[in-house]
Amino acid sequence: MSNEVIYGIHAVQAVLATDPSRFIEVMVLKGRQDERLVPVLNEIAMLGVSIQQVGRKALDDKTQSASHQGIVARVKPGRQYNENDLDAILTNTENPLLLVLDGVTDPHNLGACLRTADAAGVSAVIVPKDKSAQLNATARKVACGAAEVVPLVRVTNLARAMRTLKEQVYGSLAPRVKRTMMCMTRNWWDQLALVMGAEGEGMRRLTRETCDELIRVPMAGSVSSLNVSVATGVCLYEAVRQRR
Image 1 (tube, rainbow, N blue to C red):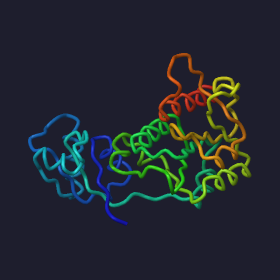
Image 2: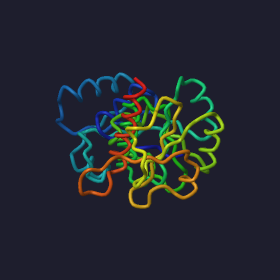
Image 3: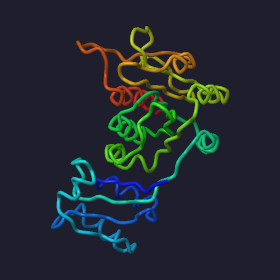
Image 4: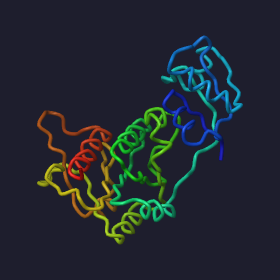
């Protein structure tokens, strides 16, 4: 597996906090000295990792001109999770909350969902191996460190994985427009897997048919739908509100 590139202060800090042995080399914007970046660079230097001071163009080229905040790192690949890891994740978690993303192919949306999942206390995010965004540098930057702490579980067959979860006494919910049940009226106390589909096409047929219930986010304005990461935040935090 090839090495990865990460950028942004939060993404670099997350690797530094969770597995600093992954660092290979770091590039920092020449002349950049501020209170947020200096402590990070000091910790990396103490690891004996090479730190190169480079011009902005070099960083822009590495990140396709993304918002890198003056720091880019090359790191060893992080841990990869698959369906075989689900049992351990669930066994070690009391009253787990899972997030399932079907067909979310935009790395910005994946990163935003991971960030919200971490904030809401989600135990793992489950995605299919096909038709899903990769956990690339963009997703990690948007996730603001959540990509390093929330397990992203890639499964070969999403519907089959969901059926396995149901056999373990899980409920699964999927927001869908034009249903009478709203996400604010559903009881979220049970062990739960929240299933979200991509914008436009939504969930695939088998994914939708595997869900126990379909719910919807109330829409009072003129727009017909929410961005998937926004809808995910609405539903996850309704679950958090009720569980607390």
